[in-house]
Amino acid sequence: MLYYTLIFLVLALIAAAFGFGGIAAGAATIAQMLFIGFLVVALLTGVAHLARGAKGGA
Image (cartoon, rainbow, N blue to C red; front, side):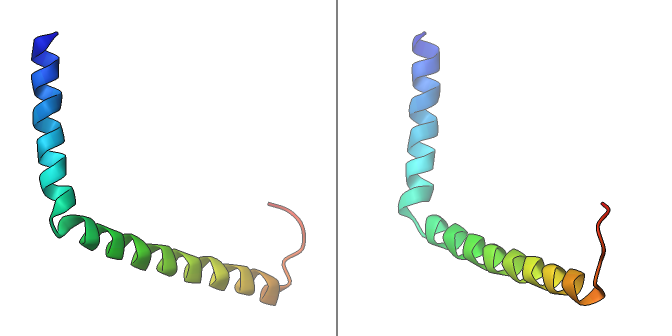
């Protein structure tokens, strides 16, 4: 049981080192860019679907 405690302690320290550094801000920026990109693709797909006048079906 002490073995797992030490493993989780090391993992927490590594996560803290990344979280308190600039990595978290970089990851948030990348996530925001991906969200906007996929939102644009979803909107374009919806507009193309409506423009084609797709009728029913899958």
